[in-house]
Image (cartoon, rainbow, N blue to C red; front, side, top):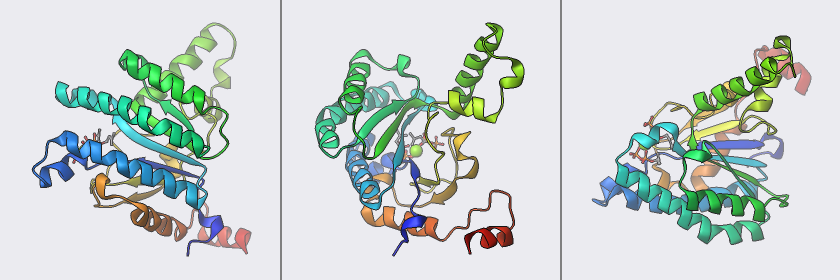
Length: 245
Ligand code: IPE
Ligand code: IPE
Ligand code: MG
C-alpha cells in the first residue's frame, strides 16, 4: 500500500506510444491516438482516487506541428471530439479542466471548446486537470522572459526583481506546485521539451507500456515507485532523516 503522505501532489505525464500501439495492430496512427483517450480517462480516475491534486498531461508538443498534416488535423479533430464528449463527466466529478500552450496556434473551433470547458469547470474544487496542447518548455520560458522584460522596460519592475520566483510566476503553470512525479510511457527516456523549468526536482518514472495500454494498474506502479524515493533537494540523506524522524 502506498502511504498517504507519499502521494504526489502533482503528477505530469508524457503520453507517448500511440503510433507504435497502432502499428503493432496494423492500424493507422490515428487509431492509437483514439485509443489513448481511454487511457486519459483512466489516469484522471486513478489520480482522483489517490488524492492527487494536479494532473498535467502532454497531449501535443510545439514540435508535433512537424508531423504529417493529416495526422495533425486528425489529432485536432480528436481533441474537439473528446472535449465535447468528456467535459460533462469531468464536471460531474468536480474536475477543473484547463489548457496550457500556444492557444493562438489552434483552430478556432478547438479554442472555443477549450474556453467553454474551462468556463464550465472553473468553480470545481476537485482534481485540477491541465492539458498541454501546442506546448513547449522552451516556448513557456521564453514567454515568461518576454513578459518580464516588457515590464522592466515599462519601469513596472526593476531588473533586480527578476529571480527564480518571478520567472516561475510567469510560466504557464504559475500558481501550481511543480510536478512531484513525471511519468513517460512508450519506452523513451527523454523530456521532449515538456515542462523544462518545472521538472527541476521531479522524480522521473519511465515505463515501456504504450500509452493506450496504460491503465489504473500502471498508474499505481508509478505511485509505488514514487513512494520509495527520498527527495533530498541537494541535502544529505542524514539531514532529511533528521527532519522526518
Ligand atoms: C504520443 O504518441 C501522442 C502524441 C505525440 C500526439 P505518438 O504519436 O508519439 O506515438 P509513437 O511515439 O509514434 O508510438
Ligand atoms: C512527446 O512525444 C510529446 C507528447 C507526448 C505530446 P513525442 O513522440 O513527440 O516525442 P519524441 O519526438 O519521440 O521526442
Ligand atoms: Mg512518440
